[in-house]
Length: 187
Image 1 (tube, rainbow, N blue to C red):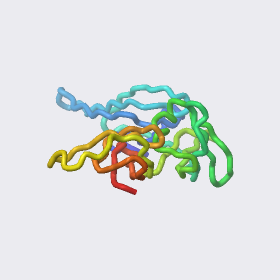
Image 2: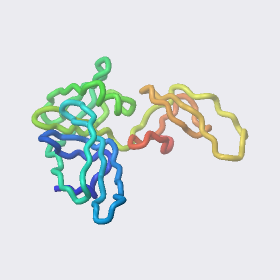
Image 3: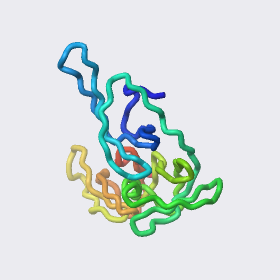
Image 4: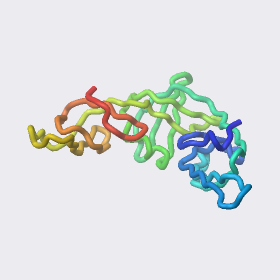
């Protein structure tokens, strides 16, 4: 059992018999004496895709969602959906467009991922924390332009755009943190 003090973004809990991932948490202190702290959450039902809000009292307990984790592989993007394969059973799963949109830019064909399966159904996919991607478009290097730290925009092979140091050129492989979409280093 989890308490409201354990709530954080990305945590998967069980509400009304369905696994739900917490998208946002806000702790609100009461103005009246003796009142308990309110915990306002915004969450997505992983079975229906609905985004809902719910308020809990401080100390309320909820169940952690009980689902299976399997090693998986990203096979390909089918339009706006993603197709994944369970590496243990070789079963293939399709991920709906809305959920796939949040991770699509971190995946290249054949990438290893963690599949979360609830009642024989794919509910979410965890990409690796760090991925290596190739820079496909970025402005040219400007030497000695400034003494302060600068960044420039780069487009990667998956279509992801992010800020990178000015010394990077087209064709270089870089490491990207998938948790906050930022450049880490050259690969």
